[in-house]
Image (tube, rainbow, N blue to C red; front, side, top):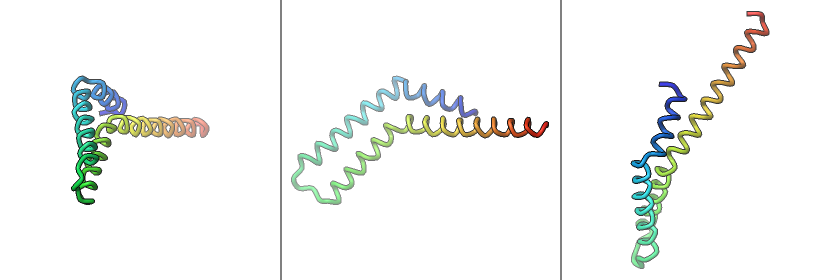
Length: 95
C-alpha cells in the first residue's frame, strides 16, 4: 500500500460518521472522568492519577488520525525530496 493511499484512507476514516460517533463517546467519557475527579471528595492520589491517565489516553486516541496523517505526510515529503535529489545528482553526472 502506498503512503498516499494510506493518508487518503485515514482522512476518510477521520471524516466518517463512525469516527464522529467514537469522538462523541470519548468526549463524553472524558467529561465524566473530569467531573468524577472534581466531585469526589474521598479519592486517593492514585485514583486521581489513574483517571488523569485515562483522560490523557482518550485524548491521544481522539488525536490519532490527525497525528498519523501529519507523520505520513512528513514521511512522504521526505521520500519525494530524497527521490528528487537522487534524480538531480544522476542528471548532473550525465547518467
